[in-house]
Amino acid sequence: MNNVRCSNCNGSGKERDSISLITGEVKYRTCPVCSGTGFVDAELMHYTTYPDQSLEKARYLMQWNGKPIELCIEGNHDFIIVFKNGNRFRLGGFTVGYRGTGPEYTKKLLDAAGFGISMDDIAEMKPPVTFWSIVVESPTIEEAKKKASEIESNDNSFISSEVIEDGTSKTINGRGMSKEAAVENAKDHIPKGSKIIKEDVCKEAEEGKTNIEANSEVEAGQIARKQIPWDATIQKKICLKPKSEGFLGLRPKPGLYEVSWVTDWLVSIEFQPLPAIRVNFRK
Image (cartoon, rainbow, N blue to C red; front, side):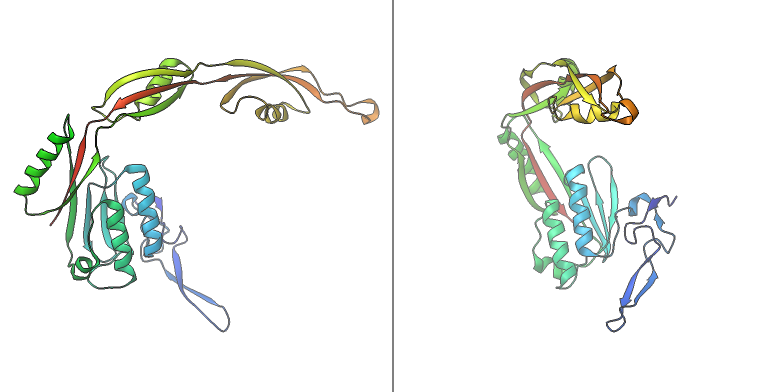
C-alpha cells in the first residue's frame, strides 16, 4: 500500500519541469515517482531523481543502519540498498555506464557503502550488478584474517576486504533512572559477542528542590531549567504561594513554586569487541 509521502515531490504530486528566464514562470510536471499521488510504498520513501539529494539520503540511512550488506544496481536510477537489520530502500539519481555527474555520485555512494570501485569500472559497468559483503568475526584478529583469506581465495567474485574491528577495548557510557537501567542502556549499544571488562559508576543520581518565583507553573519550569543540572528531569512543581495581582492591578507579585528534580545515574562500561573483517564481493 502506498502510504508514505513521496520524497521526490515532497508529497505535492508534481515536480518542476522548467522555468522561464524571461517571465520567471515555473512549469510543473507529474512526479514520475508517485505518478502524481504524492504517496509511495515504503521501499521508495527516500527515492528522488536528483543524485545530490539521493547521496545525502543514502548517507543518512547509513548513519542509522550502518553500512549496507548488499547494493544492487538494477539499472540507471534504480539502485537497491539493503541493510543488516533487514531495511531495504530503492534509490534514484545514480547512474553507470558512462562518465558524468550521475556516475560521479555513484562513485561517492559506493565509497560510502564500503565498496571501493574506480570511475573506470563505473564507466564500463552494465546493469544488473550486485555488490554484497559478509563480516568475518573471530576471537583474535589473526583468526579473522585467516578466515577472510580463505573466503577470498575460494570466491572469484571477491573484490576487497577491510578490517572493521581490530578488537581494541572501548568504553561506552549509559544513563538511567537507576544503576541497573543505566547499565542496560550502555549494553544496548555494545556489539553482540563482546567481552565486558569492567563497569564503573561515574555519577550517582541526585535529587533536589529549587524555589522559583514565577507568574505560572509553566514559567516556573522554564526558569528552573536554567538553574538545575543540565541532565536533570523535573519531577513535579508545587505552588507554595500564588501570584498576587496587587491592588487594582498595581505592583503585582509573582508566585512561589517548589520545583523537584532528579538526575540520571551515569555508568561507564569498558568492553572488548570481537575482531571483524568485512569481505566485499561483486557479480
